[in-house]
Length: 155
Image (cartoon, rainbow, N blue to C red; front, side, top):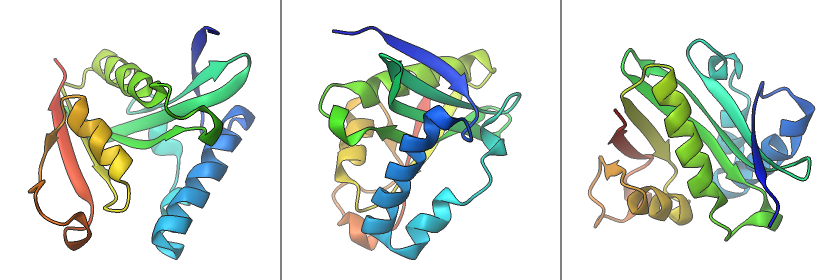
């Protein structure tokens, strides 16, 4: 297995282009034009001192990534967590979560907040499996809730 390298970049970095393209496609195919709008939001919020954009690189290629931004003084909000379609089912999303949590901790955040869409059951499962507390009734049909919010304490 190849070693993964964590790279801190701007979302505009050319190495992040596959992430942005695939996320835009995923969001648009699942949510229509509103999905594309999510990816058009300004990305400078993912830059220090309040946020960070990370890529997991394998053999010089971005295979996974994600970002966080300031939600409030104690809380980082995770966004744009992604695994390249050719590299899924390898635990890379879990690795991204660990890296983002560790990085957020170094920024002084003690809590994580995130939302995922109701048409992303794999994301919901990941967050439930990695210690995130759902801020919604997990027994309710996700399509009737809207965005699914989670939080986690990360001291």
